[in-house]
Image 1: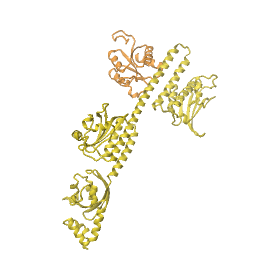
Image 2: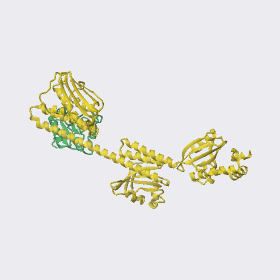
Image 3: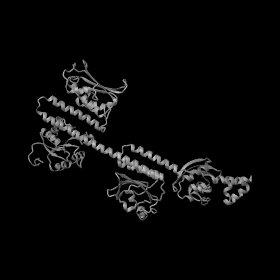
Image 4: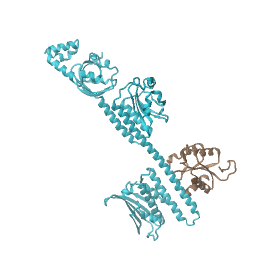
Amino acid sequence: MTARQPDGANPKPVVLVLQDEPILAGIMRDFVEEAGCEAVVVRTAEAAVRTLEWRTDIRVVFADLDVRGSTTGLKLIAMIRERWPPIELVLTGALTPDLDAIPARGVFCDKPFRENKVISTIRSFAA
Amino acid sequence: MGGQRGSSPSRATSPSRSRSRSASRRARPIGEAHWRGLFERLSEGFVVGEVVRNSAGCITDWRYVDVNSAWGRLVGIVPTEVVGRTIREVFPGIEDAWVDEFADVVETGEAVTFIRQVGTLARWYEGRAFPLGSERFGVIFLEVTERVQADARRSGLLELGERLRANIGTDAIAMVAAAILGRVLGVGRVGYGTIGSDGDSLVVEEDWTATGFPTLAGPYRMDDYGLYAEDLRKGRTVVIPDVREDPRTAASAATLEAVSARTLVNVPIVEKGRTVAVLYVNDDRPRAWGEPEVAFVRQIAELTRQAVERRRAEERQDLLNHELSHRLKNTMAMVVSIAHQTLRSVPEREPVEAFQKRIQALASAHDLLLRKDWTAADLRTVCREVLGNAVEARRFTLDGPNVSLGPSAALSASLLLHELATNAAKYGSLSGEEGQVELRWWIDGATGEPGLVLQWREHGGPPVTAPTRRGFGSRLIRTGLVGTGEVDVTYDRGGVIAVMRAPMVEVQRL
């Protein structure tokens, strides 16, 4: 993890990227940086929770709902809404999920990504 | 007239059967012997009964006045043991209907027919009860247990077939089968246990039980319950009428009876040569299992096994489909992003964007197909999806019957409509503020083989002219719905009209 410590002066908003596919993780990181934010990339939902517990400066979670692991993407999202209500959610996945299952303020970006839409969504949430 | 005394209702007051018989013989010797002989030769059971009333005058029971030898065979009791006793004395706990219905015959003077079980005997009887005058009635009947049970087994199989057609999970399939078996056989408990790879540990998650019967849910070691475990491991059905009598269970009878298993039928479920589960049928009293009953248990076990296997295959398929879709979508996302990065320095943006949008159109067709397990996509939804991504909803109208497209046609239609929409946005009716697109389709059967006709019509836009250069877009359009062409594009002054045709068999091909 290259992210700075939470107490360090960090002018850029921090976005947590959850993606287990390395190339896509790179692409998602690019989007985040393009939006003027700093990206913290994790590969599993468990790692995402640990990171959220440790770092208090994360404003947005940009997550793929299809990452493998014991915790599914949708479960993670529900947990984030419960434990860290202010965090904004940008979601993606193979299938558009049941929109009722996505908590309020979650935006779903279908694949293949429409670069402009993804970047502007991240930027507006991180602002 | 004295000769008729014997058949008159007052006969019940005769001091004893033998005296009344000899009295009749004296009065009408031929007649009595004749009727008696007939009565005894009947294969139907015959009963003469007399109702018993309580102090309030209500009929509460009835007494056997006479029964024939067929009665004895059909009921399993020596006839001379019952004459003079009441039905409630002979069959303690018998169903009230056996008293009430015959009471009605006496009270109303009207005959009735019945098919009913004597629960304590577990036998079914069909017959007719008729009044004999005064307080008496006659019943003539046959045993129909086998017929009733065969009917019940048949409808049990039908019911299982019906219930399995619904899309239910594997646990629910097993429970449905257990409940049907339990009800049809009239036993205490039916369920499935899964056997561990050691061939000895058995786990029951849940089972069907009759009211008040204990469940078997829990972990077990098969070898604790008798030597029949070995039969099950070898794939042999085990039928034990009474666990105390069978050499395989005599030593472990107490253990079995502690879980209310006095009788059992166990059918092994074998997969790849190994017994992986057992279907068990238990009851707490001995039972002589007939061949048709055991065959029925095996049939239900087999149908259930097949249904569970089918369901598992479907679940694996669903999982695989989702995984494949996930991979495919990721790949498309990578292709688009890599193209975006690679072509970042290309000054001409239009081809780059066109490329990205074509991939998007493919991806959306892929999504639609996946919703129906990659077997079909609805034409209207394909149109709405593609056009909805390109233009505002008020700029286009869709009109046509429900048509489902096979995977290839769905992909081609998506790309084709995407190209038409792109062209319309650049040069056609969607390039201005007010123009419209009208998309209509119908099935044309005039030429024999039914075909799909899809008509794209633009209007309200600027005048159009045929393009001079043929790009990839127009090549895509000319490919048609199923790759065979059959596309007519006319650059009418009112707007572009494209008519695409394809045989329905091709359109719906998997």
